[in-house]
Image 1: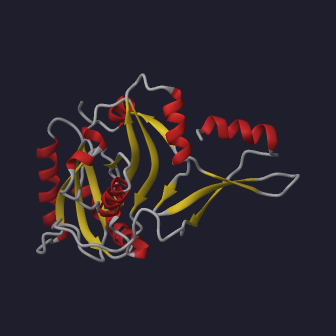
Image 2 (image 1 turned 60 degrees about the horizontal axis):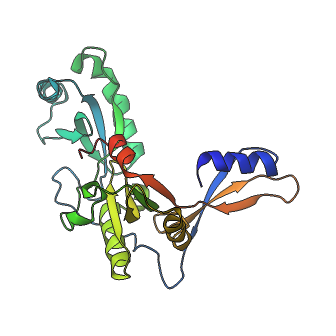
Length: 267
């Protein structure tokens, strides 16, 4: 259900438009779309149990490589970095210069507070402030043909997402998304995944632009709920008459051309 329709329902039937999102585990025959288990990675900068780092700056201009290396060298001198804890990461649209590996967001924020004292010396100019960040997992190398980015259809149905929860030692959202697609394909579904920077998405179907509305309706009826990390997601709406009303979040169709443009995917 899109936000506009939710707003109309809220406006017509309920007392206000405040909402609370809740989650409920779907356990019909087992966990839906795979299990949430910690996983290791070949990424040399992903330390198991230390998923956080500090982004000193992100460069997106033409000379981003030179600027990132320059900051890395200055930071190494100022912070006395014999363990090679200052590293450069490719991020959407540019390069991020990162510092350290931390078990919790709180410990990274504590170190960030100390860095503020030397930040101006390390990073002259009007650049973005240093921030705590989650180190992303690398993409699983298998089944590139299941990646929605490789398809040229008109519409696909978005039914689920996975995102890492480092506080619960869950860092395998990309692997679990690929496993979910494999499971759905074994059941005869035309399933796809897409790994974004912060979350992995699960899609069903690859339909042309001129697809008949009835075809879309039948597919949506079969997969009408939306899931996050194997849990069905609900939105709670307040009502003066009957108390809170809990409605499930619904899957929805994505225009693939617009989706690729929003995620900087070349055609």
